[in-house]
Every structure is written in C-alpha cells, then in structure tokens.
Length: 337
Image (cartoon, rainbow, N blue to C red; front, side, top):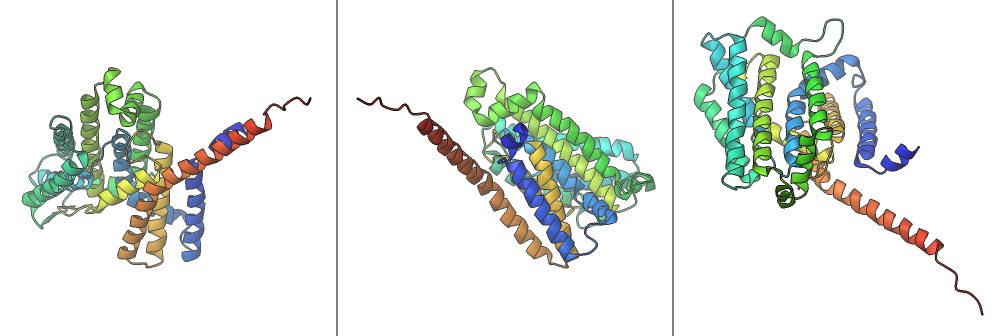
C-alpha cells in the first residue's frame, strides 16, 4: 500500500492508464487486435525503434539529443548490403557496420563536446549527411541477396512460440540499459550531468567524456538496428527507416524523460513504446492513413513534452495544500484569559 500511495501519481501510472485505453480502442477498431499473432507482428514492427530508444534515453537524460539515429540505421543497412554484394562474410559485414555506427556517433559526440555545438543542430546536420552518404554509396538501388539464415533471423520467431528473435535482442539490451542507467555509478553520473552540467564537472565527473561515450553507444545501437531492419525486410536501401527519428524521440519523451535532461526512467520508456506500437497497429488495422497516424504521433510528441511538467506542477500543488492543511490542523490554540 505504501508503494501504491507513493507511485499512484507518477507518470508511469498515467502511462498504464493510457495503455489500457489504447487496448480498449484497438479491440473496438478490429477483432484481430488482441490476437497473439497480431501482437507478434506488432512487436516485430517496432523493434528497431525500441532498440534505438534505449540509447536515446541515456542521451536525453544527459541533456542532449541525437536526431541522426535513423540516418545511421539507413547508412548501416546500405553498407551491409554493399559488403554482402562484394562477397564479404555476413559476420564480417555486421562487425564493420557496428564500427561504422560507432564512428558516426563519435563524430556527433566530438562536434558537441570538442566544438561546443548544440547537439540538436549537430545531429540535425548529420541526419542529412549520413542519409546523403547512403544515397552516394548505393543510389536508388537495393541489395536483397542476403544469406537465408540472416533473413530468417530477421522475421523468424523462437521455435514453438510467436516471439520474434528480435524481441529477444531487445530484452537483453533493455536489461543491460536498465542496469547501466538505474543501478550503476555511470548511470548516476548521467543523471548528475543532465541535472546540472557545471555542478557535475566541479564534482569530478568528466562531462565531455561521458557525453562522447553516450553518442558512440547511440551510433553503435543505431547500426545494430540497421542490421536487424535489413534482416527483417531482406533488403538494403538508402531510404530505409526514413522518419524513424520522430517516433524514437516521441517514445522517449512520452515515457517521461525530461527533454532538458536529469529525469526519466526506462520503465516509462518501455511503457511508452508499447503504447505507441499498439496505437500504430490499431490505426493500421482500421485502415487509417499514414498521414493521420503521423499526426497522432505529433500530438503525442507535444503531449509528452507538456504532460510531465503539468503533472509535476499538479502534484506539487496537491503536496503544498496537504502540508498547509496539516500545519493548520496542528496550529497551537491561544490560551484564554
């Protein structure tokens, strides 16, 4: 009961309510929404965004942002396709792609930490740069002659279940990131930097190195998402995952992570991920156009920025009133003469 009283007003509790409402909406729009096969397809469709959202959470908690993740995904997919077409083993190609993603993140991080440029501007620029490089490498062609084992992993499921292999990858990564952010000294340093960069620096935290590390992690994770995306669609194209960055940022912010850094949890982000995946799926089953779906996601993005601040103000107001009422109740009675 104490835990319930403590968390009933939290953002995660509100997300649970929103999740129930989305499930009710989905079941009313289509009789297939609550089927296990639909949940399997739904999970598979969102896994690349989910994986990128894990690293994005760490970056935003640290007070930065990375808008280039979808372009790194596209570039990684193209480079992997070119490697396979050139006859390189798929394992070596994936290793090269992960290194490429880390280097792309390193470029982002170096521009932010060494040159002192805003991450919003830097990654908005590299969003176009990395996507442009993908078109330079492959043009408007596509590579689809990947090994069967590779593509089977992308859209296959664990034998005897309806759980996609990519979901297992996400679960492992999610556990690792939860430990990093919430149960490690590195995670505490991330929160400290997001709360007050200068105070963190004076306390001995190497702020620039931490941020650079986070951007490198984000780039490598985006490249991993590119590998999974390529395996799932059995195709490497320069336009893979165009626009995914909007969904990734929305997932993180709707999860309660403060856009200015210092606050947020991966529990909220995972709940947000499920909500957005279900909402996309429900609208798709109802044959609602992609433009309307994008509009809904845009509204959620605005709500995700305004909602936590509004909820925090309401909670603070309620707390002040309770304290004021308690103080008034305990006020001493003046003695009568």
